[in-house]
Image (cartoon, rainbow, N blue to C red; front, side):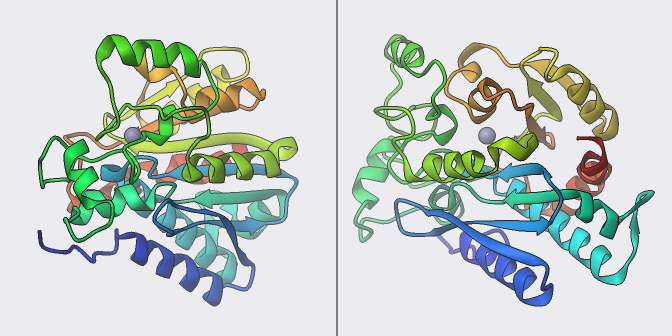
Length: 297
Ligand SMILES: [Zn+2]
């Protein structure tokens, strides 16, 4: 398989994070953890306000366009602050005086690397990974982490109920949907949980980005209703309630239990992996939602 060292690879994501921190002195890098294969899981922290918004991308390997989206957002925000410009109708500097923005672009760098470049028998985990991928060498649709755990089913929310469903559906470690042995068993999940816990008292919202469907999933309650309508209005995406297998062990499920509004935004439309050429249009479509959220939440 030809290696894709595009601007979407974990290495390129790390390089972009580093570049933003070097270029703009008000940007801090926070190391949240490292993946099973030792790749860094880093967040960017911007601003100094008490209210904090957390944007999370790339839980799923083949959904690497979500990491790119958040980095495009971070870059535009940084440039506007630096130049003293307005974003939409807001002064970027004032936004970041009133808010702290935490962006974790890539939760699952090993999964992204697998989806982009596959694996090989030379890799220590390669033989097992090809087995979990049902013998296929094509990993382009891979969602899970390096040992076949779907990070977005590994959070502590109705986890053991889901394990019963796993048995009924015959789900095992593989490309997607396997929840792991116990809640937060994976270093990638722990990295996100630590970040949420650190900012917990100040978090006004968490948004996690997946692809695809042009839809925003949420658990309908007085906590989330108004925000859901706002996100739908500013993105043009439709609203749906999370249900079925998607409503167990997910990040937004767990964060809602902490009384923090949380939403899953499924970007773009098509089949995963969405074409890389779609990235600029995705940012244009979601720019208003991303920026105006800073004032709304
Ligand atoms: Zn996903």
